[in-house]
Length: 313
Image (tube, rainbow, N blue to C red):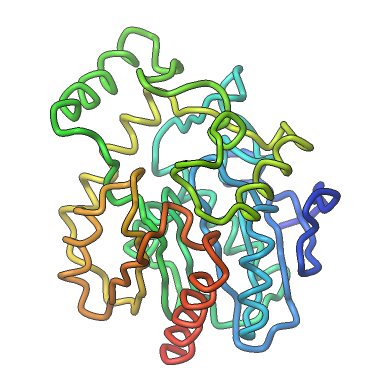
């Protein structure tokens, strides 16, 4: 595997920790981007699986928090987002052909971690959609000592009366050749750029909210809008499939804000009741992006994650 330097934006809200970005390719030729932070750390490397719409630079602060606790971090731009290859002609629409394609991205990411000679052992942190991808990766044999998940997308928060509609549209619209279009209630523009801070669903921390907004204003090529009908179909199928599988043996800590409004808290709570080596932490008043919440909440979360990783290693 050859690693070529990729753009890494530090002109707006510079990462508090030096990093470097590289282009890599999945087995099907899709070009992805990875960002490596704190590679001199001694305790191991965290494979950071971001959520839908996210990108490498957004995790600079998290990488700094992990580096303070002795861990390097490797972040990925999944196919269809960040600076990775966009799948549709309209690059603003979040899309994946089949959900298992994300596992090709995981394989390429791990190979790159080996190529970069990042310190071992490896650990996993998965946020939102990255939590869905990460759970599947554990079943697929991802070699990590321990994991952590923040607001994992093990279910999407959909009103009960709309759930049958979502399932139906996720199948009917692609069959009609309209799988590239946006489902009702979603928009083509980035949530962070079109939503005021007040009562946003991501974070109560204005500094973090402004960081995300400023990054996308300066580099609109990083922005992503709503998902396609195909993405919706694939995500619903994957989450249902995962819900029918027993919890893995990998030690884990899961963090969920009490004000979560994007993923389904019920699915997360149900999963954690059966995760023998797992613990669920409810973060009082936390929104979806608990890794980008108040400083006190972030400190508590990263201390707990690092403690779990240390015990597992």
